[in-house]
Amino acid sequence: MAVKLRLVRLGRRNRAFFRLRVSDSRYAPTGRFLEEVGYVDPIEQDPAKKVVLKKDRIEYWLAKGVRPSHSVQSLLAKHGITCAASA
Image (cartoon, rainbow, N blue to C red; front, side):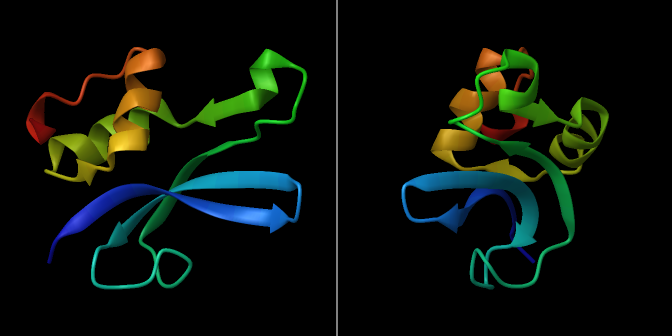
């Protein structure tokens, strides 16, 4: 089973909202998932609410061998979470 860490776009038109999910790569991004580990709200003004990540759970999944997508990898790098296993 190839497990990935990816962003899923939700929300309405002109009001995007993204959730960070751990899911099997064989399923659709908006389909079945294993765990939700954070969210990104690009329109939010408060920086503390703009990106919310469960760092302990993300590090747990990365240690298990989950491969983040390119956009997730850059998002995690901005917040100080290294993805050494994904290289």
